[in-house]
Every structure is written in structure tokens, then in C-alpha cells.
Image 1: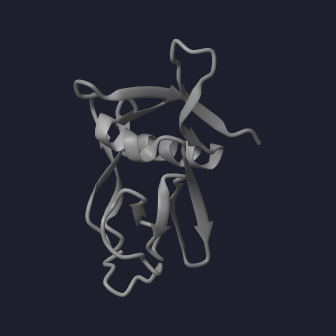
Image 2 (image 1 turned 45 degrees about the vertical axis):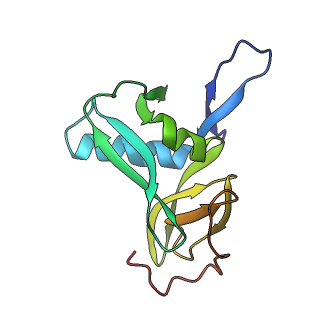
Length: 141
């Protein structure tokens, strides 16, 4: 199966991927929109401070984009990303993984130099602080 890429088109000849969303993640998002009876909502993908590694991922359904959001559409699913989160998420792959221990969205982020064992938080090269060992002892996820 092909992976769907959301791209930012710049005046330059080449394009840079904004986010990549796997078919499995697109299907889950579509199912959630249908189950919640909010077919016209968008999925906001964002980054905020917190988590065991310093920054954490978040997702929420919203009725409309805000000023300055980057809005992308793929297979009928709209995603919105604010400019600050975009700095941390550029080039990330959003996937949905289902296992015996439970399922959930997973973000493979090329900007992260370390991640918490739970996969919900991360640290970038520009973050101050100590290297994370990937442990999750204080994680509430």
C-alpha cells in the first residue's frame, strides 16, 4: 500500500513533505469521524510542552481551522497544524498501530533525538536538558 504524503509547495522546484499519513491512520480517523457523527471536522495534530521527554504530541477534532493553521486534506480527511507545531512535526509519519497490548496512533518524528518509552513524548536537538533514556517511570500514559 502506498503512503499518503501531505506536501508543502514552495516556489522552489522541489517539495518538502509536511506530514505523511499511512492508510491505516487515515482509515482510523475516518472511522472516528463517522462514529462521533462529525464528518466535517478536522484532526488537529499538535505539539505541547510536557511529557517525560519534554514535549508531547496531541490530537483533537475541531470544527474549523484557526488563523495561520496549515490545512491539508487526504482521502477526505482534513488535518490542521499550527505554525509552532509544524516546526517540530515537519516530515513526521503518522501511523496507527494495533497490537495485543492495545492500539493507538504512533508518530515517527525525524526531528526527535529521543523519545519516551510510551511514544507520546519526545525531545529535539534544540531542547535543553539531559538525554532521555527512553524510560517511562514518570509517564502517565
